[in-house]
Structures are given as C-alpha cells and as structure tokens.
Length: 88
Image (tube, rainbow, N blue to C red; front, top):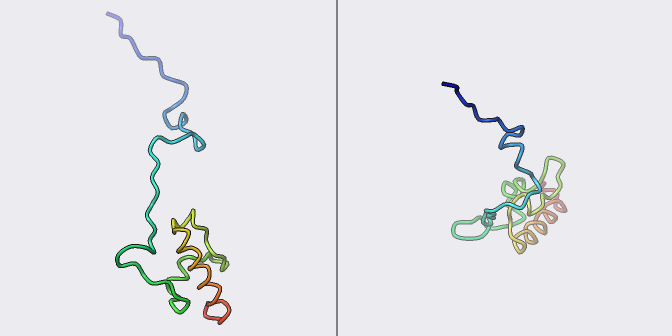
C-alpha cells in the first residue's frame, strides 16, 4: 500500500500575512489618562511626563501611546510648560 503525502505549500502561514492587509479584528486600547484612577496631567508631575517623551525629549505621538486627543493636547501643553521652567 502506497503512502500519500500532502503537498507542502510553498508559503508558510506567516508569509501569507501582510502588514498592510486589512485586519479582521481591530481594537484600540483605551486611553490610560482617562477613566477611574487615572493620574492627573500637571506640569509638576515630572514622572508622568517623562513616560510620554522620547529619549531625545520629543513628545511621543498619540498613535504610539494610545492617548485620546483631548488628553494629548493637555499632555503636550504640560510638557512644554515643564520644559519652559527647566523641570524636564
């Protein structure tokens, strides 16, 4: 009796996936600065502000940090104030 083997596909499952392919299940993380128990954005809270700045001191964009638009504006304003007062 002959054994039959399945023909292996030339591409693996990993190669079939594309970065630019439309994903079926998209989800967005909730804003870490809004909701219950969220820290208040203030220019004096340097520990919080350093989380949202890069090593070079640039403000990280909201698409990376998943911060809402309203909170991103407050955050950027407080970072700029802290820079102006030489706290950062």
